[in-house]
Each structure stands twice: as structure tokens, then as C-alpha cells.
Image 1 (cartoon, rainbow, N blue to C red):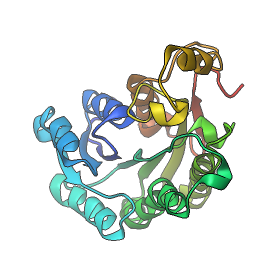
Image 2 (image 1 turned 180 degrees about the vertical axis):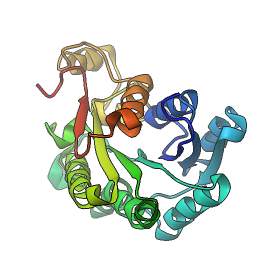
Image 3 (image 1 turned 45 degrees about the horizontal axis):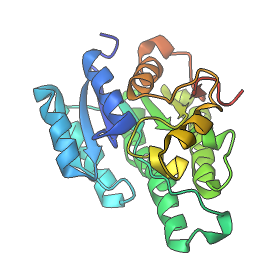
Image 4 (image 1 turned 135 degrees about the vertical axis):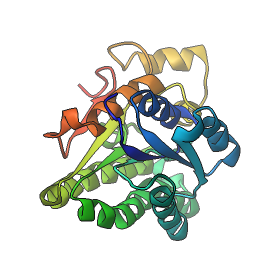
Amino acid sequence: MRLENKIAIVTGGGSGFGEGIVKKFIAEGAKLVIADINAENGQKIADNYGKNAHFIQTNVADDDDMRALVMGTISHFGGLDIVVNNAGMGHLPQPLDEVSGELFDKLINVNVKSVFLAARYATPHFKAQKSGVFLNVASTGGVSPRPNLTWYNMTKGAMITATKGMAVELAPFGIRANAINPVAGETPLLQTFMGKDTPEVREKFLSTIPIGRFSTPEDMGNAACYLCSDEASMVTGVAMEVDGGRCI
């Protein structure tokens, strides 16, 4: 029960890594709001956990939605202790000069602006209570970029830098900020990183991961639980690679 009496928000909690984080947080005693743009997925996951989970449909790139998410969480559960910025998007591998302006803007809004908005609306509450945790789900791409995903890699690098800046600025207020860097996992986004999902492509991709498998939602849940728990009270500004050795 490492998160007992903690109240959390998990964006993108309706599937993939976010669902894994939700499952682990609930098991460890947290109450949480699942934020997802997909109402069917988000409500389904929330229904699995009864009164300990609540769904709020959210576009993480929208200012009004993010404000409503933070205020709605505090209203529903009576507080807020943890914000996990997990929602994100990728794209099919393509040369950097062929990425459209529309796609570039969407990558920035979903992967980077969302972190800004979460911080903008949750930080005043955290400052008032002199405690709080931000966890940003970045990527190994932000540390060791792959070709043909350049602008995606850039957004994840921005998340990592934001995490370190938040950690330094917010530490005097009792607020911690960390990130986790997964390698590609068995989630709906897997194909966007590989281009196509065939045994040959999988074998080539897995050959770059020393442990020899993809990240799982359970891996992310375990890492997120530690970094958001009081066990990690001295850990801030870290971008933890949960990648089976991919970045070595």
C-alpha cells in the first residue's frame, strides 16, 4: 500500500502504459482520476475499480480541459497528490523533411504543451499543501533518438528537460518531478514506431534491446509507483530509463 491515501491523475489512462500505471496505483492504495480523450476506453477502465477510480474525458492539449481535469479531481476526491503525464502520440517513421506542419504542431501540443498545462494548474495546489509529485512519461527517443522519428524524439527530449527544470524550481516547495523513459512496448503505439508489425521487423527492433523484450504496462506501473511514492522522497529530476538496456 505504498500509495495509500494518495490521490492521482493519470492522463492517457485508458490504454497502454497508462492503463498499467492505473492498475498498479490502485493496487497500491491510490484513488485516481483516469483522463483520456477516448471516453469508451477511459470509462471502461474506471468502472473496473469502482469508487477508487473516476473518469474525466480530457484533451490534454486543451487549456480548458486540463484546468477542468485538475479542478474536477480535487472536487471529486478532495485533493490531489500526484500527476502522471502519460498521454502522448507518435507517428509512422518518415524523413524529418516530410513531416507536415500539422503533424508537427499536434506532436508539440499533445506531448509537450500537455506537461505545461498540467504544471500550470496543479502547481498552485501543490504549493499550497507543500507537497506533490509530477511524473512525465517520456521515451528513450529523448535520450537516444532513432532515425525517421526526429520530431517525436524532440518532444520527448523537451519533456525530459522540462522535468529537470520543474524539479529544480519546485523542490523548495516540497514538490518532486521525475520522468520515465520506456522503450517501445506492447501498446497501441507500437506500430507507429516500427512502421509495420511483422516478425522480421520485431526481430530487428528487439535486437537493439539487450534484455530482449519490449516494455510492458506492468514495467511502467512498477517504475511509476516507486517514483511517485514516499520511498522516492529524495529522488527528483531523474529520467529513469525503463528500457532493458536500450540506451547503453
